[in-house]
Amino acid sequence: MLARIAAALMAVVVCLGAHQSHAQQREDFGDFVKALWPDAQAKGVTRATFDTAMKGVTPDQRVINATTRQPEYGKPVGDYVNGIVSQGRVNRGQAKEKEWAKTFDAVEKQFQVERWVLIALWGIESDYGAAKDKWDIFRSLSTLGYVKYRAPYFRNELFVAMKIMQNNKFPREKMVSSWAGALGQSQFMPSNVVDYAIDFSGDGRVDLWDNVPDVLGSTGNYLRKGSWVYGLPWGFEVTVPALFDYMQSRGTFAEWTKRGVRRADGKAFPREGGGILFFPSGAKGPGFIVTENFDVLKEYNNSDAYAIAVGHLADRMHGGASIKAKWPTDDRPLSRDARIALQKKLASLGYKVNEFEGHVDFDLRDNIRTEQKKFGMVPDGNPTPLLLEKLGVKVN
Image (cartoon, rainbow, N blue to C red; front, side, top):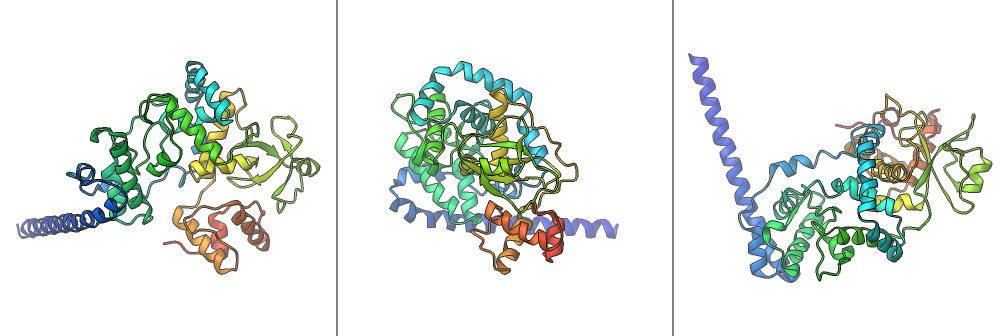
């Protein structure tokens, strides 16, 4: 009996504590919203727009939880790519190409971006428009701003979203997005909408939720302004010869040919240009020569796995083969925290690190090659738990 009474009292205490915590959160969030208004006003947001956007908005714990879950990280690259590039998505993309052929013709002509790349992005971002946004963009962005997630980025995006609603006279209920504020079939962040979205249909306004020509034209505009090179593949799956020197990571296509690197599909490399040798899961898995267009895809989503998935899906829809090499079954990608810890360690060793957000770029992979060679590892540039262990990097 005493135990049950004690348990009941403890439950009351916990509930009171939770209630006080939520009450404090609401009070703090109220102060956060009040502090937003002067900055919103300075950016041209009217009081009516601000009040409409923020009416009834409270912090969303689901959004906070989602900041720790990113599908491009935390799972083997092969699992991610295979999950994205399904036969069903390939088939649906090919059907969409036929359905919107005239629009793709026009987008390709104006922006010089291949239709299959546009279709791949469309398919991955919203399953060709079938996957609908469900989150209140103002609640999501204000929650991320409130908890200072990657501050001040999401706080600023909140103001841009308000201006989009205001300038386009969109009803409040139309302003839906992903949990992180990416909106429409192309999943543009609000600032991307301002910078790249266009009225490709000619109806007088930009609508990325329901207007397919606007979606495709805006995506083409985004890639073109990102310096997409028409006619240049994103990359190729390759094989390397026995006793290959894995410290070689860059070269022209002619140089790669001389080094004995071959395309896995048996075709010749282009006569001009070059690329970077990339092993997303280490030398035991598939290898690729990726071009400057690979970096353009990463401007859309700064993830190597994502860029591979986009490029491979585009290839498959256009008649290309599946990736031939087997993805390793023991692939253990580093978490974002582990990648950041690695970046900090490499910076402490004197290497130049461009940012500490956990994105391992190709310059950093070359630095990783140098460290791997010191430890007698295969210098494939792929960061692994073993490398962290040898470097003495500990992750909480």
